[in-house]
Amino acid sequence: MVGDGNLARVRVGLIGLGRMGQIHAAALASRCPSVDLVCVVDADEARAAAVAARHGVAWSTDPDHVFDDPTIVAAAIATPTATHADLVRRAARAGKHVFCEKPVSLDRSATLGALEAAAAAGIKVQIGFHRRFDPDWVAVHERILAGELGQPYLFRTSLRDMRAPPVEFLAGSGGFFLDVTIHDLDVARWLVGEVVQVSAHGASVSGPAFAAAGDLDTAVVVLHFENGALGVIDGSRCAGYGYECSTEIMGSAATARVDNPRARNYEWRTPGWAAYELPRDFEQRYPTAYALELEAFAAAVRDDTPPRVTGLDGLAAFDLATAADLSWRRGVPVRLRPVRDPDGVRYEVDVTAGS
Ligand SMILES: NC(=O)c1ccc[n+]([C@@H]2O[C@H](COP(=O)([O-])OP(=O)(O)OC[C@H]3O[C@@H](n4cnc5c(N)ncnc54)[C@H](O)[C@@H]3O)[C@@H](O)[C@H]2O)c1
Image 1: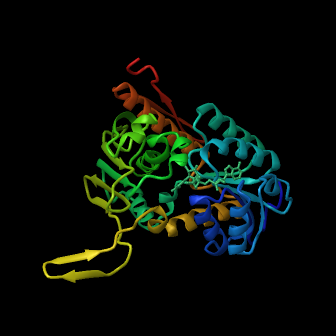
Image 2: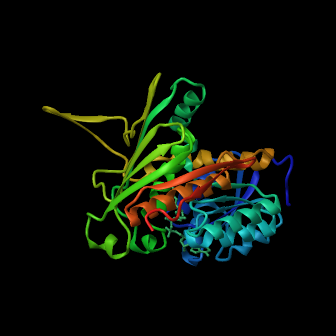
């Protein structure tokens, strides 16, 4: 593997420069002290050249530009989900560590294949569950770990987009649970514990487009945790009023709440009213978390420590999301069995539920 050991800054190539990739480009170029962004890649030549010019780095339309460069140590992947597994495999073959956006694939065996190729090559894989790096969520996690919440009773998250992403994106997204709820399912495991049952309900309320595509724009997922706690996740593609990502965990000793912060710290007051600006999207809500997740990835590569969100975490969240999808489609609860092995937790999903 190239370049391991005593690296001051980790040389990274970024592949995929759409909505998420451009956020990562800005973070890698100027907000991650352990990163040296070397080049950016996008299939769209004009986009690659424009993002490269913005950050003063090299560009290409070919991911091999990253994989064939012996001075590049790690790849960050933010291309459409359907391309991730192949790119992870190619990174593994080239001995590059990988930061990969969620989910690794829409297909379980492709996910497993990519993770096995990475493990065999000895590269690190970190999945883009950015909330695990947001200072507010991290503070709550640390206090829960320290025992300050006591026994968890109830977990609640809301993840609501102000407006739906472009139709072309939706077509390859894997559907609501794999694309959106997967973040909440990851934090459910992280903050409360493993899940043994998922019941999902969905609706397409904003117009006919979602139902026509076999997808949904509004969902409620009920979780039963192994430790006895209950959870409820609500999600929307069409909240209208703004972007919301909030949580609450009620426990025997305390209740933790991460509310949706304001976009700006001022209010506008008029007789009888106070108004403040809400975040409009994930870019506005989470710039710090997106930078910190990439900084943590680079630090893990540089220091040869395990990433804080592993490929197996990505697989576990994928399994929970596919269980939610199955539950919604079949109209029944789906049971899961978390199996612990030395590397982490793997889920066995009762795919016969409701069949
Ligand atoms: N963590 C988060 O909060 C978050 C938010 C949004 C999207 N995502 C994830 O990020 C990924 C990208 O989503 P997006 O919304 O940025 O998509 P997008 O469609 O806006 O951008 C994808 C980009 O990849 C380029 N591309 C496509 N195939 C390529 C290839 N083979 N090689 C190089 N470039 C290629 C496209 O030209 C485009 O610029 C998805 O997996 C999505 O699930 C994560």
